[in-house]
Length: 245
Image 1 (cartoon, rainbow, N blue to C red):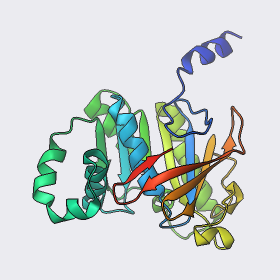
Image 2 (image 1 turned 180 degrees about the vertical axis):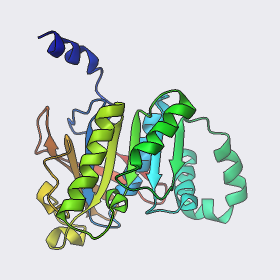
Image 3 (image 1 turned 120 degrees about the vertical axis):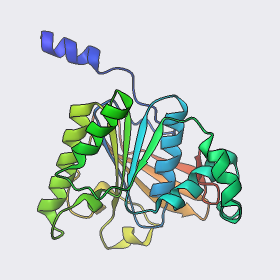
Image 4 (image 1 turned 30 degrees about the vertical axis):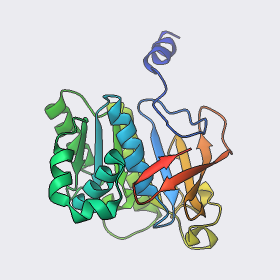
């Protein structure tokens, strides 16, 4: 019982979740964000990461799916309320402003896989003196070794789950849907629409699809320690990489 009492105390406050769904996320949880390509997974991830970093919590954003300069354009648009087109036109001006933003968020495009992903977290701890509070992996299957398949898919998500539990970071893994109606990007997405069946592993699963050109539906498909099955509709400004209720 002492171990249970200690675990309860160590759970801490719920992790910041700035969208209108009752997702109960705590340190050490793995969160899957599931959607078709071009729906807005990376936009959501960057918006969420910036909101967390704004609170002073350290964030690591690892992506090999999006070039770092493209991430810089997206982040600058979000922070300075400008369109990505405007940022592109005057990269020299906006890069100076972006360099002056003192958010504890770091970016990685290192060629990592599920076997060595833990190394970048150890490097972050050595640099920062602590593990990141939040880690974005964009996209999860870029960490896969060898041929695609259910076995390697499970290895990736189990490695991310282990990394979250060991470091206390909230790990957010972006993931694609398989073929079928959900792959269109404008149809309801369930957690079983995931490319390979990994839904048992994450504590929380959020699915996304386009409800309208500037409206994004978010479904709380799994919420291990709370209610699930609810859907919210969010405003999305793709030109400014912003998500709102």
